[in-house]
Structure formats: C-alpha cells, structure tokens
Amino acid sequence: MRLLRPFLCAALVLAATLPAQQSAPLDVKTQQQYERLLRHRYTRDLTEVFAAMEKSAKTDARAAADTRFISAFRLGDWAQVRAELASLPPELGRGIYDKMLSDLAERPKSGVRIEDIFALADAAPGELNDLELRKIGQMLGQVVSPNESFWIADRMSRGTEKLGGKDPARRLAAGRVLLAGGFRDLAKAYLPDGADLDNVADEGLRQEIAAFLAA
Image 1 (tube, rainbow, N blue to C red):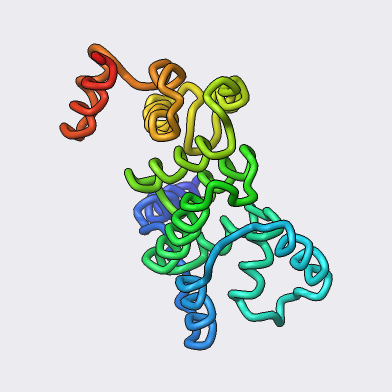
Image 2: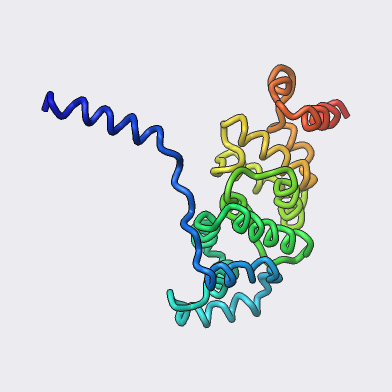
C-alpha cells in the first residue's frame, strides 16, 4: 500500500489539473437539427401542449434532435431541456436558450407558470447574463401581479441554483430579476447596499443599483 500511495497522489494531482470536459462534437446531421431550433418560434399554447402530450409516447431516441427538444419544451420537461442545452457546443446552446427566452418574454400570455420560469432560469447553459436576467424578470412580471409577489418572495427565499437563497451572487441576480419584473419593494431585499454594493465589480451595474436604492 505504501508503494501505491505516491502513484495515487500523482493521479489525483493530474486529475485536478485536467481541463473540464467539453461537450462532444455533434455529427453534421444532428448539428443541423439543433440549429433549426434557433429559428423555431417558442410558444406553449394549450393546443401545443396537448399535441405534445399525444406525441410524447411516440417520441423516442430515433426522433430528430429538434423534435425531442421541442417536445420537452412544450411539456415543461425542464430537466431534459437543461440536459440537452448543456450537451451542446456553448454558442449553439446559448443561442437556443436566448431564443426561448425572447419568444416567451415578448408574449404576455406565454403559457408558462412561476415554477416554469424558475426552472427555465436554472436551465441556462452557464451564468445568466444581463439580457437573460431582464427577460426572466419580464416573464415573472407577466404571470404575477405586484400585489401577489408573496409567491415569488417565498420561492426566492428558498432559492434556486441560479437565483435567490443566501449566496450573494444569486441574491444579486434575484434582485435584478425582481427589478426587471417590476417587483421594486421585493428587489430591495436582494440588491446589495453599502459595503456590499461597493464589492460589485461592474461599475455600470453598481451605479444602476445605487440610483434605484436612492430613489
């Protein structure tokens, strides 16, 4: 065992220094199927949801990649949506994700619920950027009125992988989402102030938050 110990230590050090595993390259046909999702119009009308439910039993591994993805999207299978996005090349996965957010956010009645929005936020293939935070906030503002924000307050308090809870970065993201959604009073509970605000690296964001808190 003593003889093996140096080799085990060396193996652990080597494993720690290896780069994170990247998504496997897609074959040309699958790449084209996923790229069609960049042009898809993302909606979740009831008729589409029911149609997806009828087809779900027939959807299997032989179905085209975009067909499987759209089915998961319409059925609210966000774990599958998240897994698919994470498996794609970063630029393609982010492009599909942003297209979904844009299409859903521009329709006041997009067919999504509060939990759908939080799950969609957590499905982001990477950290949420400024535009994505605004789109998510916009969607929350469409499905929840300001006088019913206690539903959102409870979910933000418990936290998700990307929003709310006790982690400072997730609280900042939550505050920005809430501000974009028009939940101004609730946003104040999550946005940093004082010394915590000074720690925000983005000067433009820091000034935006300071101006909001001072208003």
